[in-house]
Image 1 (cartoon, rainbow, N blue to C red):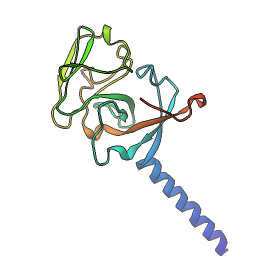
Image 2 (image 1 turned 120 degrees about the vertical axis):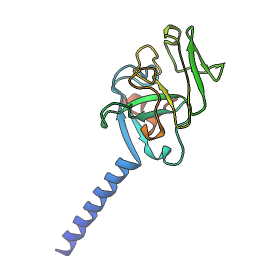
Image 3 (image 1 turned 135 degrees about the vertical axis):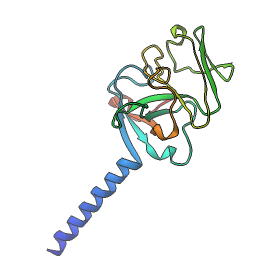
Image 4 (image 1 turned 45 degrees about the vertical axis):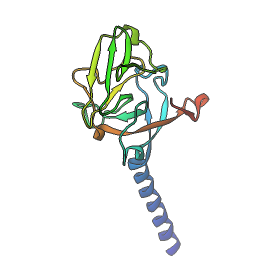
Length: 171
């Protein structure tokens, strides 16, 4: 009897630890749609580290799991952080600029066909864009806009599905 209670306590403890780790430390996200191509494709699964943004905000270039304003609390999106507080980001005549200099975004596609767009970010404002600029629902949409630090859940780190791409980093 004592042994059975000990096993039950260990199992309950493991379940609680697993729940806490998955909720607050590390998790997974499945890509839906084509907005992050060619970096991530629909049905890819990535590992998300949720502790990355506990003490500092997202950094330019991060692929982040976030909630978009005015959307369901349970709806999440994977987007690239294109600009951080204090930055000016623009797409003018098909060219992306960060703080007045042509942006180095080798992962971005479709920028040359995008409508002109410009934003200067205030404190606690972040611009998120999909890598596939023509197919992305992101900060350029009027009902999304810029995000605040509290909108970020975690940073996508590695692909774990499909198996051929197991443990490839996300750049």
